Image (tube, rainbow, N blue to C red):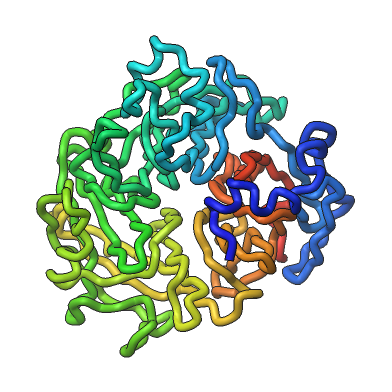
Amino acid sequence: MITRRQFNQGVVAAALGGLAANLNSATLFSSEKAKLSGDSQLIPDPNGILDLPEGFSYQVISKLDDSMNDGLTVPDRADGMGCIPIDENRVVLVRNHEIPLSKKTQRASDKMQPSKVLKSYDTYASGLPVAGGTSSLVYNLQTREVEHQCMSILGTIRNCSGGVTPWGSWLTCEESVEKASNNIGKDHGYVFEVPASARELVDPEPIKDMGRFNHEAACVDPTTGIVYLTEDRQDSLFYRYIPNVPGKLQAGGKLQALVVSGQPKFDTRNTTTPFMEEKQDYSCEWIDLDNVESPEDDLRHRGFSKGAALFARGEGIHFADSEIYFCCTSGGKKALGQIMRYVPTPLTNDQKSIEQTGTLSLFVESHNSTTFNYGDNLTVSPNGHLMVCEDQYTTIVDNHLKGVTPKGEVYDFAKVRWQTEPAGVCFSPDGSVLFVNLYSPTVTLAITGPWQTFYG
């Protein structure tokens, strides 16, 4: 097994071969014709980056160490990402960088101007900013050019994934519960909001009522303003945040955890009986959580003791057509991954958001690593299929972008050609472009093709 840390320390550097040269010399790959079949063969990429079906093309729009408009360079470990429209032709991509706490100075810290350090959430004892955060890219869908790149949040740790809000911002989540120490000045484990309008570093403010835990991803129900949150732990909970004022997350709110009705402490991980059956609806309710800043990192334990359901590493989450899909990366009898579906019950005229319940179902559980292996970030494509990023680090497994049909059928959409994970999948508002990151070394791609008709 190769871990992310080992990868970034160069254990598999030899496997990358001439990748850097390919990125510099060839930024496009296009196949010749569309083949509208679910079992289509992927076309080998001569650049050694990403194999795609016939009819699809990619463009490299940003990569590690590219110079940005603020004088910094693109950081490594590009993870979750959101696409937010600016106008008819332009979008903003807000991209997470999952950089851990390190005793070594990170590249973003090296070149940071002292005047901008004031806009870092946290710093090392040396005064240099902690290097996790987000970068923002303005991309023109017509010209296919990046018009602006900059760091937009700095001073956070392991910004893993997050979610786009209906009011035009990105929620970036820390997958870390580091506490203030001799090395750093502040506690971590929070959600931060990045406005789409950011063209330079913004002042990071943690949304503390959303809880301090190993955050992974978030999505917002546009009808109620409720934020749903996943947690990357083997014994994680599924959370929701009900803001006091919809759209004003800093104005406070209530954090809750999901409970399967009549079955307290229900275990969805399927490692012990009774097993959660696929395609079966389980009625759910929500319980209030207290002391959500959780200085002892025991929020999930306290929630479970009150009856909350357990999940195996909740990761990517997406809201579409009144349904929520989220991945449980290591769930299932074979521990190869699950996709859950949660459907909020429509509110009646006299109900409040905090009274809303819903149903949970196991949409997909993998029983074979070649079919589906460690699903992570996900989105919904224009043809109604899920597009899911695999996140498995081994010497023999290739990570893919997997398509999942509304019936739960899984197929290969793309194959990454070196040992890293695809991440941050998100579509442009018109559905014409899929943006995706390759985690390390950072590469951000724009993929176009026959999205509406692919897979017939």
